[in-house]
Amino acid sequence: MKIGLQFAMPAELHALPGAREWTPFETVSGVPVFEAAPGIIACAGGVSKVNAAMAAELLCLHCGVDLILNAGVAGCLTGLPTGSLVVVSDFVQHDVDTTAVGDPIGLVSTVNQVAFPTWKPERCIELLGNLGFSAVTGRAATGDWFAVKGDRAAWIRDTFSPLLAEMEGGAIAQVCLRNGVGCVSVKSVSDHLFSDTQAEEYFDFGQALENLGQVVLPLAQALQKEEL
Image 1 (tube, rainbow, N blue to C red):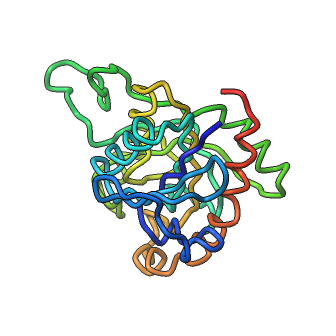
Image 2 (spheres, one colour):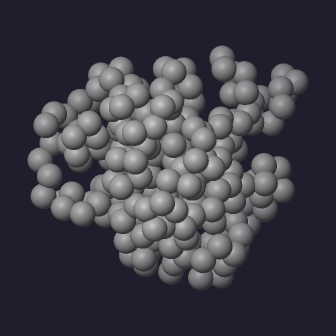
């Protein structure tokens, strides 16, 4: 199985051992693409849903991957400790709102669904456990908004019941669905939306990156042996 590792920020990609020394084998639409291991390629596609969708489409159509493993740091809406690993069970897009024409909140048109499930999250938890890593699973809410404490964060929590908030995964899951490509997502908790020290947490997320960097490539290599 050919796997694409998709990050948003270069700092997330660089958390992989040796990644800072990698040279891209090509650059497509401004996105450098690297070989991380045999049958595994990687890119940092940029922050937010448009960048994420473009990079995911690149991986699907240009690179021909069978599965995208989206990895990165994310804000947490609960008390899960910093650096905790989360295998995302499904994504919702909290900033999609066509309720004015009678649609449910979060409904993504064309595919006409609210939630975008990932590939066998419980199996991914099991694979991580076999590799010596512990993780939990839960929903992530995606949107073009850096989520911070306030009324909107409370509304996202109360409306969608997510464990995490981030800015790319929902777009990646949507692109994977449209292309018939598997989607797995692993996030590391970097900050807490309802903490008074959220800003300090976010700008000091070295532990979150370290924990992420340890698991992504081993998980991808384990996934290569699975049947989609």
